[in-house]
Length: 365
Image 1: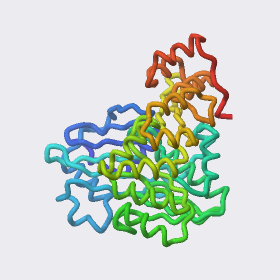
Image 2: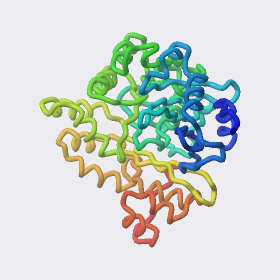
Image 3: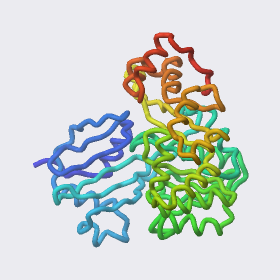
């Protein structure tokens, strides 16, 4: 008979190892994700009772009586002095499962995350919309938390965050930071934005744009003198524009293009690239900065032309993904092979490495 599984001890141990996520599945040893890679632990295989007991241990008191009958649930949990955790409780083939993301107490600075300097410059805008995009696990939430905290430390603003659930906790510095959780403090992302406009905000951080209603509310907020920061699940900066427009019915799309052309300040597509040698992950960022030419292309739906502007690298502080990857190689953070594997256009990047094209200026200084 094995030892009883203790979720608190397991999470404390996982945090010590530097894991970013934990996966608990019936019939398997717990898995952890570290530096982007999933690996099994040497903990005994979990039973249904193990996971039922774990969810009862860590779930909010408001749902403890009914949680074992639920199919999906997201919430935050904290082990004081260790970490905060974003927990997803779900079912697989009728059996309970947990996916847990570790959220550290400290909010890293943009410099600590090795983000390009142009990102902090963008935080000087007083209105418009800035998008950080990428697949799940690409560091979007951490990047945005870092940028929000940069505003908090360096500007006197009122920042309203609307999140599901609240992840990083901000301590008011020069700014006031009001954090609202969907389902607890506000009904939905869209209603949270609507009421945020009545709360004297300067900056509105929306955890994620999931639907047309939320996107419409975000665009309205950015049109009415507020800086809106948010995320989308898209793979590059230009695809993000298509995704936003296509959220709306066809009859509304021309108006949305016009709104987006006027309000977009930047679209940042991010991915994390793992360095085998340094055993660390670094962000590669494609940065589309809105210019008069970009605005014109968005309004006319000539989005393919925007790729050429980004790939030029020397125009208006734009950064292509390949330029970002080659800079990481130049800085000794990742290898050429790791950069090529992460590239969306490895043939073009290979030519850069072979000296066909000259490197661009250093946006990271």
